[in-house]
Image (cartoon, helix red, strand yellow):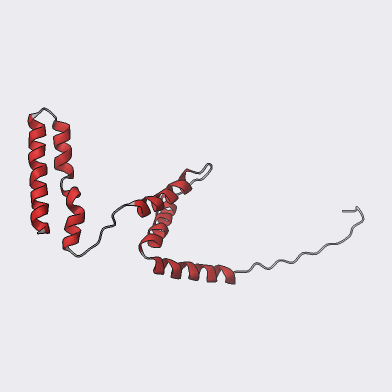
Length: 128
């Protein structure tokens, strides 16, 4: 049933693109032709038993976090640094258990890092 609906939707989009072309709207027709397959991605994935979220809010929130860090005044990121930041955010979204394990390991490692410093004072009574 889903396969037939996908095929029918794609056929309808092709016909609409043809109609738009005939009505002197070549840009709209080209847009429909280019993006027709993308409009049925969720249905194609459903055929493979994959679930697609109803909204992209979570992904948009993750991307907003990356964007916020990039656009702060005086911040400069290398391409590799931004990619790392993006991956950490995506893992946090896509696999919370793996992210929690990563955070635990990172925090444990940073807790074991210590800086030893010795401070002494000596009175010189104003003499250098």
